[in-house]
Length: 143
Image 1 (cartoon, rainbow, N blue to C red):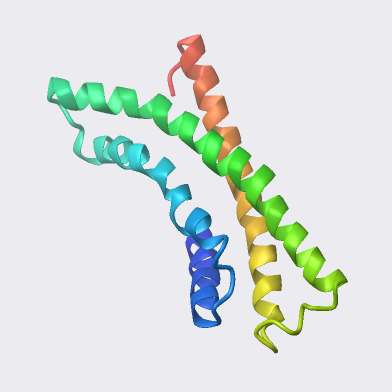
Image 2 (cartoon, rainbow, N blue to C red):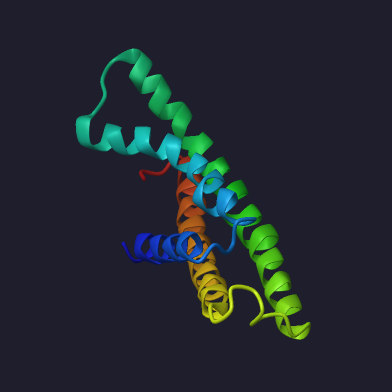
């Protein structure tokens, strides 16, 4: 639940202090696309879907989830968006403009940068678990 608290805090601060608009659609929207197939997988864990169509949907959702998570939450999150955010923060600091924008709320940008790095590390941890499960599935082992 820590990741939800961190993400919610940054989202609140960015809305409250009118910062990070460029990054918000990705971090608060696009990333959730990888969650859609996970919902069906989790639903099956709790309700054990038995109809043939539901079984097919669940089985198709597993590789879709794995692929979308790796693409969106590992590559796009860590290697594109986090890098861009850090470059922007460095440019503001180096150019002496950091305190000029939303005077007194440079802390929001620092918080967003720090939280983003922490969440990115969590994404890498979860990705390692997904990759291990994919490897087990490929070898025919029990998950």
